[in-house]
Amino acid sequence: MTKKSLALFLVMASLACATVLTDQNTAPIASVRMTPDSTDVPIGTAAHIFAFPLDSTGALRPGQNVVWATSDQLVATVDDTGGVVGVGDGTATITATVKGVQGVARVRVGPAPQIALGADSIEFDAQAGQASPVPQTVAVTNTGGLSLSGLTIGGITYGAGAQGWLLAAFDTTVAPATLTLTPASGAITTVGTYTATVPIAAPGASNSPQQIDVFLVVAPGPPTTYQMAITAGNNQLVAAGTALVIAPEVTITDSFSNPIAGLPVTFQVIAGGGTLGGPAVVNTDAAGKASATGWTVAANGAVPADGRYVNQLQVTAPSTNGATVQALAYFSYSANVHSIWPAQGCTGCHGAANFGGLELDLAAATTYANELFDVPTGCASGTLKQVASGGGIAAETASLLINKLDHTAPAACPSGMPSNATLIPAATRDTIRAWIRAGAPLN
Image 1 (cartoon, helix red, strand yellow):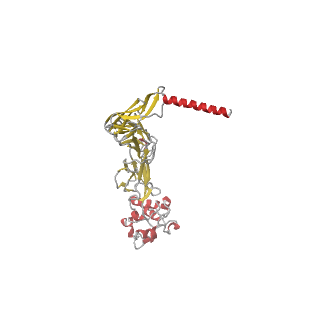
Image 2: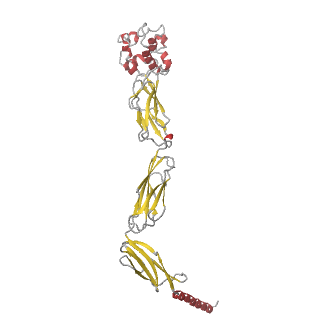
Image 3: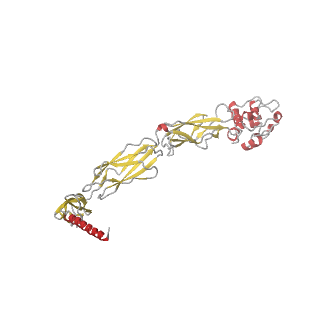
C-alpha cells in the first residue's frame, strides 16, 4: 500500500468511527435501570444507587447526564452521584432522570436491624470414641428495625485440643432463620471439654457480629470398656501384724485410658486373715485412682515352705474386671520371736547364767546377733548352727534352736527346750519355724 493509499484509508476509518459514535450518542434513551431497585438504609447510614441508561435495544448508553431526586427529604436524601443517606422512618422513592426518562428505586429507612440469638452457648455431651451427639439448633431473629438479611457464618475458631469437630449451617440468610450445629466427635477419644466459637454476621446489623460459644464435653467411654489395673502396693513383704507401707492402689480407665472418676471401689480381705484399717468402699478420684488404707497383714495357717504367708485383698468395682492385690507376711525376731523366751520360761535356763552357751535374756538385737543368727555350735560335729541362714526348710533343718524346741535334736546335742519333758505350744513353735524359713529376719 502506498503512503497516499494509507492516508486515504485512515481518513475513511476515522469518519466511520465518528459516524458510529454520533449514532450511539444520539440514539434515544428507552429506560433507566436502577441497581438496586429496592434497598433498606438504617437511619444515619449511607448507601449507593446506580443508574444505567439503556436504549431500545437494551444497550448501555454511558456518559449521560443523570438528575437525581428523592420523594421525601425527611426520609432519605440523595446526591448527584446516587449516594443515599437515611434520615428518618419511612419509605422514599429515589428517581434518576436521563433525557426525560426516569428510573425509580424504593428506599426504606428505619432503625438498624439487630441480630438476636436464641442461645449464645450450646453444650454437647459425648462419650470417648462413640457416636456423635445429635445436632442442636439456634433461632436467629431480628430485634431491631428494617430487615435482617445477608446472614453469614464466619470461620469457626477452636480452643485447645481437637479441631474441626463442628459444622454450622443456616436454612436461610434472612431472619428469622435457623442455625444448625452438628458435632462430629466420634474420633475424639481423650476425655475433656472442647470449645468452639461460631461468629454470626449480617450487613447493616447494628450489633454484627454476634457469636455462639459451643462446648463439647467428652466423658469416658461406656462402662463395658472399663479396665482396672493395680498401680501401687502389690506384692509387698511385710512383718506380720503391721500395716503395708504402700497402700494398695488401683486405677480404673476406659478403653482409651481415660480415668473414671467417682466409681465406688470395694476392698475385701479374702486370704491371710489380715484386716483393713480404712473404709472398705472408696470412690475413685479425678485420676481414676482408689486406695485401701491401713491393710494389716497376718500370718495364719500352716507354715509355708518359705515362711511367707500369703495375704490377699480382692478389689471390685462396677463394670470392671476386678483385681487381687497380694502381700506376704513374715515373722521377725524383734516383733514376734524375742518375747517368746520369757513367756515360755526359756530365760530361766538361758538367762544371765548363760546355761548351755545360749543367753536369751539380752536385748533383741544383741541376742539375735551374738547368740542366734548364724552362730556356730559344736552339735552334730558342728553341722548345726543356733539359727541357720538362707531360709527355707533347709535352714530349719540346720538350726539347733528349732530342733531343741521340737525335741528332735540329735542325741549328742543339748537336751530339749524348755525341758526334755515339756514342749512349748505348737503354734508358738510354728512362729519360730516360720521365722527361720523366712530367712530369720531381725525386723
